[in-house]
Amino acid sequence: MAYAAFRSIGAYVPSKILSNEDLARMVDTTDEWITKRTGIKERRIASSDEFTSDMGAKAAQIAIERSGIDKSQIDMIVCATISPDYFCMPSTAAIISTKLGLSNATAFDISAACTGFVYVLSIAKAFIESGMKKNVLIIGAEKLSAITDYNDRGTCILFGDGAGAAIISATQDKSEAIIDVHTGADGEFADLLMSPNGGSGSAHDTLDQEAGNCFMQMKGNETFKVAVKTLTKDVVDILKENSIEASQIKHFVPHQANLRIIKAVGDALKLEDEQVVLTVEKYGNTSGASIPMAINDIYESGRLKSGELMLLDAFGGGLTWGSALVPFAPKVV
Ligand code: UT7
Image (tube, rainbow, N blue to C red):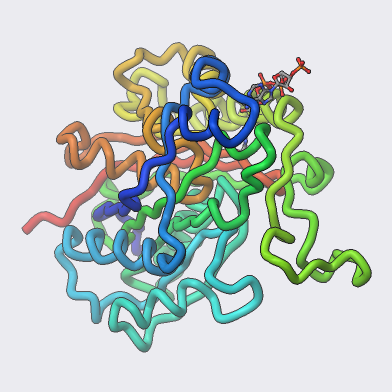
């Protein structure tokens, strides 16, 4: 049987920084409020001619170079995004495949908001274990600044742009295998976090073709409460089902939405500070890109080593949630 191994990671962030002080000049907020309630100090903003596919391709290029495989061996590309280059078609994954010089790989996007990277990980694992694909490029890429209302202080302080990518490859070595991936969704809570306009669900008389009709809206406080409850239950379940103790987790890599949410889940698992990966302070919430960007952060700082176990945990619009137990398994050369 083939197993799925998490071979490599890469990420890209735009150079422009939007600080809390910048936001305080745009809406009625303060650095103190944002820092205390979210842990965010700054986020990155893509330029007007830099698209989600550009950031995704740059992150993917790094992941490919670090994977030790030739890009011609990639047989599938899956991109998690809620801010695609084009809302209907073509998919951002298809555009990325061309930017990478790949023309024969299966390519498609998935929409699972901030849980997107855990969803694409589960898809890669399933395709590899079934024998249908051998090397899958998974990407989380977001230009959230394109769908953020910079007049709404409840949301604009949270979101930023960026991308992360990973190569998942077939292996016969069970010790390298992604152990488990959980994914779930409940549309009952759809109205907590949504872009209500711009799709076929919008009434035609309210359809606004101007930029901004896809802005995100969030009932932040209600989302916060559901997030803590759902994330905690999901990680407790996945650890229990796989007979793994929280102390065996080397890196807890949560979706970077809010420092208070991350701390609440970390405390529920009785994790030590050094187990918890935090990038929320410098990048804010980058939705589907946040987990691979955080994995890249510990990789580039030398903290992530071969064989170490990661616990991924995410929650987002849909509502969706997911978690995964993933050993880091770079190719032995
Ligand atoms: O990534 C997907 C999942 N997303 C999340 O998990 C995000 C979850 N939610 C959150 O992170 C938090 O709910 C927020 C950071 C969005 C808001 O924090 P909160 O502690 O839940 O604040 P709140 O919404 O309960 O608002 C408290 C007060 C309100 O004022 P009043 O009614 O008490 O006078 C808000 O109007 O804070 C006010 N407020 C602000 N004040 C200064 C809301 N936004 C701001 C702001 N600056 N930016």
